[in-house]
Image 1: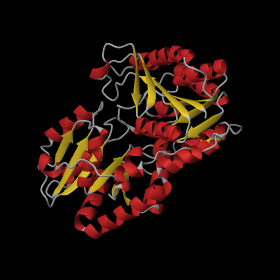
Image 2: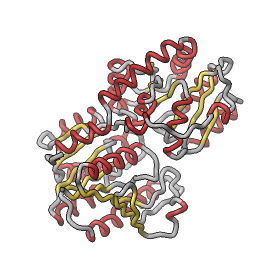
Image 3: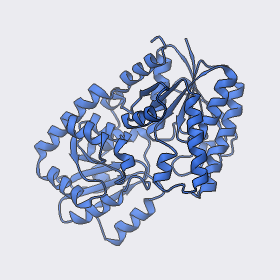
Image 4: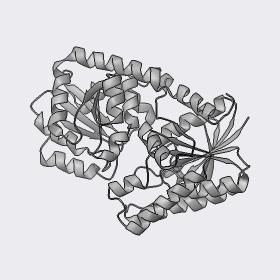
Length: 406
């Protein structure tokens, strides 16, 4: 039995890609006989507000699915300025460091990035305790922050690149969520051991019985309307304006768009939809995980968009796995690796050029007019993710990469 610590700023009850992936990984470690502990922040994502049940606490120990979860203090603010972001990151860097100092030595520390700065805590603790550091990269930071113009101070960017190199050089293993991330790291750090640790889906969870909710009735979507869904963070990188503009183009057709989630761009999208008088676009707040399967089951197609940036040609948005696993065709506005895997190879949906609302509108109309195509794409996608992206198989491979006996 090995002791494994997962260090992450994000964890359930928050919802999102890293939260779901790491919780699934932790459960797999426990199921295979290893002792796993989570060190994370007080939950606050995506609204940057501490969840009600955790307010007024500096730290908290709880158990989720028989796994001990240590939560430590983090600074949160409604402001998304650079200073507030840095305070947010470094407050957890510091509070998690002192928590880890008091925990027993672990053979492995798995650190989730971003935020990159959390690697400072991970490297120092790994050195002090003689642990092997596994640094998981789900987003190439600071490269993405630079290209998205989130940080444009050259001095800070330079420091961040040097920090990135220091963390990588002190890691036993570097894992990446996409093949593009792994290739990027391999090219810059050819002596480091890197592995592909993709997002995936808990097939068993989505094939199980779930709460039945009549979403069409609740949202007043007519029975014959094509129900097109987006569920996830409503941020800048997703480029969700494309949905509003496409909805305007097809507003005379029997098509209903549903956008579920919260984030910094939500008010902007609400304003656009109201200004254009679009009654074919419905908004819902972020939903608990248990309600997501029934929502996906109710839809006819699922949109997965990102901005048109070269940076995202290596991206595989985690939100595409769940609809595909439930046999729903996707409308993919992400070029590069995701298009190659899920459209060209998996044949699980239709591609539209990122940020091209006319192309998205045409894709939606195609699915409206051809039900047999919808069903065929859904069937293809379900089989593809079941074969290639079942989380149980992904976790099994990671244990082998760590040279841990399963």
